Image (tube, rainbow, N blue to C red):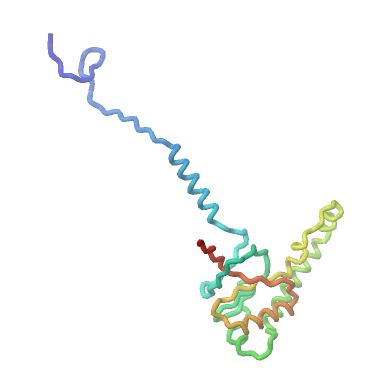
Length: 190
């Protein structure tokens, strides 16, 4: 009787070829748990209102701890070079800073024109609003005066007198609500 080297044999007694058959199994449960925790973490730390504001790179907004959600509105941006209305440069910052009059005429004309255009669109949609009222759906107060809201983005290095001139001009142009865009400061942990 022949002596065979130990190892696996096939059904004919011959030595089976040496092939390593490794069945690698990944545990997907741990990976799914990790991605779930990561997703929940990102969603909790990502605050958004759906409103995207264009902030020029030369504008550094001030920070504040107490904030509220901004509603859609016209945006007046005050940088050290220009004053913008809805991303369009209106006039040079130095002109506004040096003028003695509080009323900034070019800004007032553009803003008044935009408010009138929005008001015309609003009045054209009056039929839809009347149907809502008839159907016992009272339109929200926010929707009624949405075209008269203005958000001011001012660089934190801008002097207050210039900001005050812009605010005066915005209110004289027909805006009923003015909000300031700020960067939300993280609450201090004691």
